[in-house]
Amino acid sequence: MHNQTTSRSESVNAHFYLLATMAFFGSAFASSKMVVGNMPHQVAAVLRFGGGALILLLLLVFMSRKPKGPKITFRQVCRAAAVGLIGVFAYNLFFFWGLSLAPSIDGSIIVPVLSPVITTAILLALGREKASAPRIGGLALGLAGAVVFFVGAGGAGVDARGSRLAGDLVFLLGALSWAVYSIASKKVLVGMDPLRATTFGTLTGALGLLVFAIPSLPEVDWSRLSGHTWANVVYLAIGPTAVAYLCYYRGLRVVSPSTATVIMFTVPVFGVTCAVIFLGESFTGLQAVGAAVMLAGALLAVTQGRFRRPPAETPTGPVGSGAPGQQVRATEPIGN
Image (cartoon, rainbow, N blue to C red):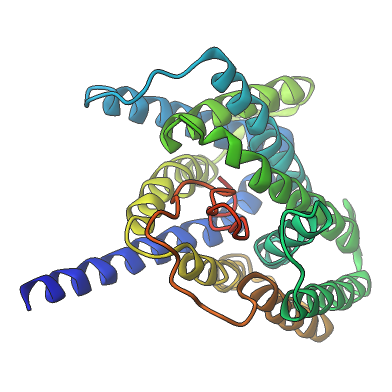
């Protein structure tokens, strides 16, 4: 009886940690939009992930005081760095660029909903996953929802910095980058713990973002940046990067990857809520319909209409750590 109570308590805590992770990453869209409004998107990306990389380095140093696992090789470090160029540099380049063109509310729907759909489609195309009626139906439904959503964005007007549709298409490139990262990161975890893999990848991606942002640095009037802007920069580095990472892995120790996948779809809920409350954003009725269809298709494609408990040996690392023969679950929080 005591063991059952303890197990139930651990499960509740795990769900709380995962939900907190999704709340952090959902809020990152609106918070990043506030920062992008006061500086070039390239610089905003550097500030967020430069700070996040430093925090992860501190965590790695702290954790290294504990008993160490197997030594990592130079090849493993290079592999983690290469994947980081996709998951941090490329993804966040598109993420912040999209925010400079379109409302954050669009990105909070497009990226977390379409990333798992694109991941599934790539795995099917590569023959690494078996096709099934629910999965194909889910992909078709997700694609139809995306078309409706983009058509709605095309009629939402144009501002001085570009069209909303152009920003949404950039968000789509971000979702594609995250899908590729989801698949490529599986090999990184072979012989390397998740914290080290994420730290090396984030450092490399942040350096890539810095090099890309150098021409835009003179455009920033640092003395005129408000305390509100800096508060958002600090929040992005600590909350959606370091704290969310820790919460995610605390939760995934107990909760199955399939359950975590479903919880991931709460990211748009938090993202939309923050965009409406803090930025006063909204989307058209056609976009709302498209978002609902996309979400339904993504759930169907990822879960195939079933929520099975995975085998005990299923790895619980970052994206791409699905057990052999199973779908690579896109369960890592979006925006890492």
